[in-house]
Image (tube, rainbow, N blue to C red):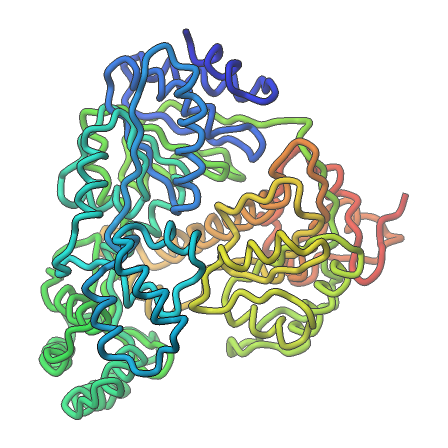
Length: 603
């Protein structure tokens, strides 16, 4: 049996692009090449396309590890392997592998029950049941509903005594033929040098840098310090933080960053703040001590990580930043087949080189781009040119833009059906929720899964969230996708200054370093935007209207050139590259976009 035959045994409908991908991956796994990059558009069926040859390889005795961006994607991948397993000529075992933060901690729950007198009977009963469950938090909440306390307060940590559920799944994963885990676990394995697999597959591979940043980077902000000082009434911490702010306010100038190696005072203040944090033993305080330790230990001679004091909301932050955090993974590619897969791995340019450099991958990798022609339908409603940009020159929100974005969402809702509104931040969610009645607002600290269930049950609902740009599958359920604001990386002068310093230490002059940073931000914006557009087309029969409220998104050339439309690019003139996020099969629809609040498409 080959990969195409296995696909035909389980696929609901044949897809030529899916067969082609599976065949090329099967050839790659049997050949001498070490790495392969696959850019597969939404609708190709990429999960089954790589899972089929991987399952056959596992059936032949090779260990396979699949890495996903989120636990939601992890379950989807496991489901694909379960479907394939029934049709395989020989049995293969499958297992999931998750970090401690996904498991309930009986000991921490017991401490909450003993020390919290504000819990009602229902909350106490749920926590008692959770303490006996001793398994995954998600599995418990599926059966019992959302727990009444933050997950961070009840999950396992390395210091928890009862690790049985976590250890059991780790042992099961060690013995399985196919293991599916999150990127966070993959990064941790790479750091420990504990990758034991013949084949490693990274799904949503372009999310690897953000997953690796959690391990390679660290940040301690004034808001973090104030929260711990207030919670534990730590006068020493307040004094140390105030002294640091007084110094940083004088030392940090127009560049909004000073480097550790240039300012010994930064080390002295970091040591004082860390000493004042020694008392509390909660997770937040431990994370801050760990971050300050990384700041103090960092060798200034390193050219891939840097330490600095940067401007931050409320004051100044201690920061450790990595130029390419996912290079941590490079040791995990040695001696095994490595497959990178995503719908946006080479979006726009078609070049896999920039991605491979960010993850420390091999210079040579087998490339594959898979596009489809007849899959879904999309129409466009774009912002009129007089619409103000979201922020003014001082990075203050423009209420006029927020009113316009709210009007776009109301217009989408008025046309009927479900609307998914994607926002770059929780602040955008708050602004829209204040202005539009009846929306399901996903706010900071709330779980997206719960809001998605409410959204699915509402025939004409509107969900506003910053967490569904990628990895959220709603096939056949969406009528509208509203992009409230283009997801440009937020401008942070301090972080940009630190990255520029690292690039200059590698021999780049100032102009070249700025160009590299701009190109990174450009590629990240296009990638995220392409992911957002892809939320609307998850099945072959999906039809969705895409609304983009941000006037920085370019208009199609056909409208700009047409004298009758009286339109120019305006704010979008320098951002024409954003149109690369649109799949080529929807180019004609984009060329005849509706302009909100007027229709400027001339027949």
